[in-house]
Length: 486
Image 1 (tube, rainbow, N blue to C red):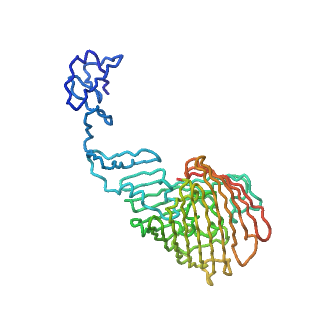
Image 2 (tube, rainbow, N blue to C red):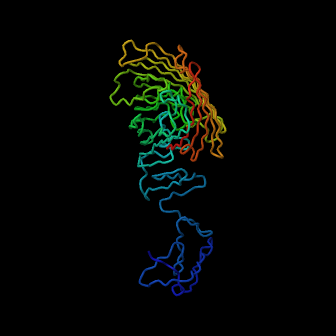
Image 3 (tube, one colour):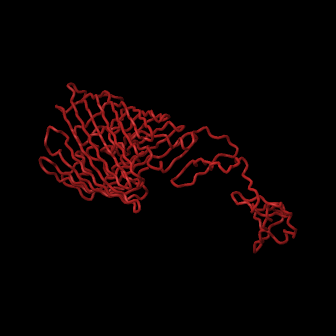
């Protein structure tokens, strides 16, 4: 690189040429001291903005303001701006981080890309409940490759349990069975959008089974070109319970409600269509999935079946949901992290599973209110299971079973100190015809500190469970959790 420095010997004294009447005389930069001699054999290029010998006007450096009164010359290829014209939109860079400035990487004179504009790409929705559905503000990291936009899916939940009762059991929905540490979830994958209206996602649980074996979490493809009819096909969340649709890392407390884990079908393989009108003032969901399989343990809930061998033992399940958010769309998080204005969401759901071992009817209703950092959630879940006379698999259930669960939760998030507090009450009756230890109520209180919004947070919960009939069990627990959610 040539180094240039003005020298007294190289700058003969000359009178500056006359400037046009509308412009002021260009200032002459003072000589730098001390001067560094430059070998005459090496050609020296003056830096932008300097006045070369002979008094010829210099080109101002890129981005520098022109001299007073001198007209600014835009770079080649830049359209002329008008006083009423809006500022130009700059395409995001290939890799964008929150708050990072976007930069255009298109070469000068290149034809515009045929890909959808960034606003259209970002607007492509994901199915309700999917981990690919962006939180408020969009995903924190994105990679754009032509018409394809990719973002990572990562959910790590590391737990510590300093105290747990002697009668706690995982099969009963308790957080742990003994003091120690637990890796609750280790989920990794990616989500993407193709051409702005073809969303998709693939993710897996690296330690999903009891033996820490890996299993599929979600894998689906969508067609979201029309807001009134978005189609999703593959392994994804069943649109039934609001708490289940919120995502495993979006709750105010460490775990979803016991009733939701036991009575919502969660992720299954199938297809559904959903439509949204007037900014989600009205939404509908309708879908068909493989028949839902229940575990013999009530609190173990429904089996998440990846259907790699197809639908072997069950028939078809049908799901419908109507929802409204009349005051504007709600974020994915149950907490009001943005301390927003009043927003309300309500929904009613129904499913019928024509199973090979049992037929199951499910009804759900939910309401979520958020305002100024506070939130209130209420859910009602009802299931009725009828065993088949000739089941396709061994079945321990001999008579119809009706279950009901009620959930109420309130909380407040102090945005200034990034701290949230929440409390939840649940009332459960797994079998209305029996009165035993499974009939219970539970009270959970917790606090959460958000290092980076809902992306990185620490949580602490205390749960007290009280059996309404039979023998009282020692199954209270204290749990701590550190979560990374991308």
